[in-house]
Length: 316
Ligand SMILES: [Zn+2]
Image (cartoon, rainbow, N blue to C red; front, side, top):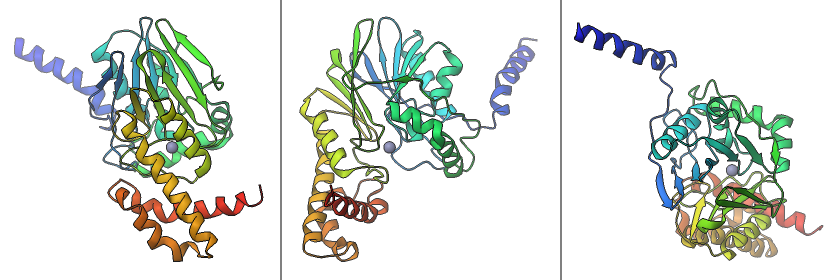
């Protein structure tokens, strides 16, 4: 009888998983970065069927009043996985969620937080909120579904409704969150979030480590400026948008990548070279980054985009 009961309970436990179609994300460990901050370092590859779309660095801050999440990930299941890791550290509710920018790999996990904690507040750059409503949320849902070959299915956009301001401070009991907004850096929607008492900054994709970012929506000059701003704070801890967290050493290389690329392209443009003609020289200058995820996919495009920006700058 005991055995039958056990078997029956096991069936009950397994049923919900089977119904979900096996698309739940496995647990990735939350690493403690400072006293009150944990980070789940996601894979650095683009969304695919294996990572089920998970590729960013969700972080959470445990305050006395509740948990504050920064970038809860790319899908409903990523958000649920993040909540499972939070549950291993504290039983406090999630009360606040920040989105670093419009790219869906960072914030579509909002849905899981809304589902578990309907009272949580969702914050973002005002332009992020605008762009998400104007069609970007749907585009990212579709893109994620295509790239993961359906593994992200069921994800719906929970668009933030709390517009951040540059310089704003949001105090959650014993912890202060200071906000740095850009007009145009990695995108036109970037918010960097400083956790003041922890001497820590989450940069979003204004800075990356071991991954080269997409610059399709970016301004090289604005991104370099935001990167410099992050470094100038000279904090103890940095969480980049992708790749390992650490001290200023995890931010400097990407700032240097952007500066080297933009300066080299500017110089060769002044000599009259086209993007095709300058590629080998630029790639040589960036040899230190060749092993970074996304380098070979992005570098050619980065040269063309930098050229467009340099030409545009002549008319400013
Ligand atoms: Zn991004």
